[in-house]
Each structure stands twice: as structure tokens, then as C-alpha cells.
Length: 319
Image (cartoon, rainbow, N blue to C red; front, side, top):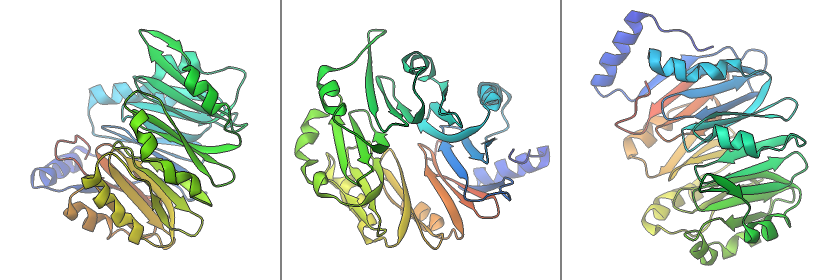
């Protein structure tokens, strides 16, 4: 677990916040296997697993602690994913899903007890389930009931050997074992994206895929290069395209309209809808082994278990 703050340290930390401090550090024990970590950013907490141990970094607030108590009961979790900042999905060693937050109840109802999963992403309107056979199910929620879109059923049943999925409010993006990227518009708003995404079918050797809120598909290829599709907001797209200058990237993470990249030397980069001061701060981090972008902050973990959490929203509660 993250170190429990003393009262003195909490007061000192609050004073720094009032003076404009945006970044703090925690520490977890990852001595057994520093590479075996996973991070998920919620609105007011950071959840981290390492060697199946789940840690929660959050403000010392009794009410909020009670909200996250259920997560401490999760066991043998090997991967976690934050959905919209208010919902968390976890997959355990046996491939069975666990759910917490606003989307948890209906995701629990939609999960197939006969399947094992590698990733589940949810929103208030639909969920995407990726099972260990590489099959994706996209299920919609409408009027307190559930049904599958006929258009979605036609398209996603043609996808095979899927290894990763990403989504925003309008689209689901999938990455195949062959390094190819495809997508499915899941709302009327998403349909115009057909004109933006025509070029992604030519991408090759993609190993990591993300999707921004404004509809930009971000791909990371095996050579460490970033690829960016067209999208609906060219102003922010211009900022995102700064990532095309990055080299030797081994992982990317996107949330909202922010993109974060981690290179082979352990340096972190950021671009998109984020201020320059924050970008400069993040690029001072060194020896980072894992990253995650959240709705209010960006997280990086060092080999020694030090955790950097930087606030990227002025009104964020995290410290």
C-alpha cells in the first residue's frame, strides 16, 4: 500500500498546494518485479497493482476512503483500466472481471460467465468486452435496458485475434494481432468520423493504440514511432501532432485530449490539451517504467517504486 501520511505531512502538503505545487510523490514496494505494474487514474485517486497487490494513492478524506474500500477486496488482479475517471475494471489471474464505480452494475450484468477476459472498457452508454480468444463484444445501454446494435454486430464479429481496444463516447478502436487497426462508430455522432479514419487501415506493425475524446486515433508502431489519424478538432489535433517528433517510444497513454509517451530510456513526454509548464515538469522525470494519463493528472512509476503524480487540472482534488 502507499505510505500513510502523518498529519504533519498532510498539512505540509496542503500548504504546498496552496502555493501552487502541482506534483507530489508516493512510494510502493515493487522490488519483486518492477516491470509487473499497471496503473489506472480515477478522478480523485490513483490505483496501482504490482505482483497482484493493489495500492490506492488518494487524499486523506474519510468519505472518499469509504468509497474505495471495496477495491481492497479485489484479489489476484493482473490488469486494471479506468473508464471515464469514475469507473474501474479489473481482470484477475483466471480472466474473470471485477467492476467498481458508476458503470460497475451494468457491466457486471453484461459480462459472460462462460468467458474469460483480457480487457473491459465502459462508459455510461456502452461497454466493450475483449475476451482471451481475441473476440470483441460491444453492448449498448438504453432506457435502462441492454441491446446490441445490428450494425455493430455485423462489424465487430468480423474482427479476429484482437489484442487491445480503446474507446471514447462515440467510437471503439481495436488493434489486431497482425498490428492492424480498425474502428467502429457506436453513436450517431461517431458516424462522421468515417471520413477522418480512412487512413488507419494502412498502418502497420502497431503495438499500442489509444483514442482521444475529440476522436484522434493514436498508434504506436514497433519502431517506437507515433501515428495520428485525422480528427474532429484540428486546433487540438495540431497540439497532439507534436507527438510525431517523439522517438523510441515504448508505451503511450491517452485520456481526454492529452497524450503521454514513455521512451526506452525512461523519459516521459506529453502533448495535447495541457499547459507548457506541466509538459516541462513531466519531461524532467527519469527512470520511469510505466505511465498513465487520467482526467485530472498524469502518473509515472520509477524502477525503485517512486510514484510521480502531477496535477493537470487546477480544480483537481488529488494531491
